[in-house]
Length: 339
Image 1 (tube, rainbow, N blue to C red):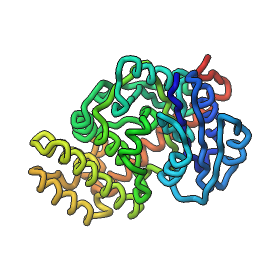
Image 2: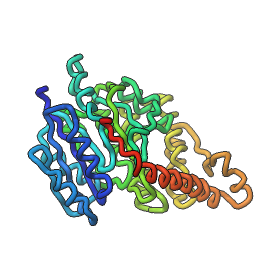
Image 3: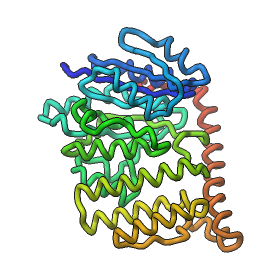
Image 4: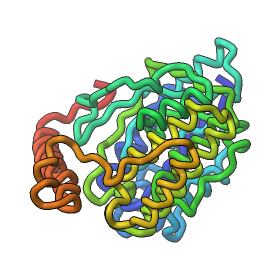
């Protein structure tokens, strides 16, 4: 019970979710905690709502808009915790999430061990979150974790991690130059500084599925495509620094292939760089990248660019309908995580 946990929440235009997120942090059963909300120049009511929940335990600060990575760096610079819990402004923690993870310390877990947890996706009703295990939901060495992530194109949600201050300081700050996948790159560095992960299945995080205007959406933004490819290059370099083997190179090629649709056909220069990197790894990329079988007939009849747009647009319409239905049902179903 001696460990102070800092729950750090960057927030930007999150007026619809920020109250529930802060309350989920306040409701943590771990008694020794501080909660720091950094408003990143929001233009809505995020700051005023957060300030309504300010207390001895909850600090709310603001800064001009600089991006999520800069807000996280600022939050860490003013926190005092022995352990760090990152929490996005629209996600939720189960009440005993932190307590269950820190229980691992009683089993001799090192401060260089990265603690992870289960996570489930939801839209408006967290009690209906879907928890789908992947190969990352177990104890892994840094090499094995990155191999699974890159080779199978899977990931862990940001809030699943509980990181010691020692490990956080060893990894360095969040990269403010990355407009997307800054969390993926950051936790690569955390992994490199760690002795591996300890997965705590009883601890849970509720990840709110992003809407159409979320920051991680790449779309046709040149800056976001360039930032994403830069993050991918860093990923591959980090993994090779741990082990330069055939399986590592194969995972790197699969990682590049899975991301190729983000760049093709809008940024053929990045596609060319990806092909060159794959060749350096001893592999070869399939260009144009294969589309889902559902859209092959569109590709044959109307070309790859239109098929790509259909692959993005049609599932997006389906998600919007599901989102509308879930939002409507949430008005009559107000169960919380503690119900």
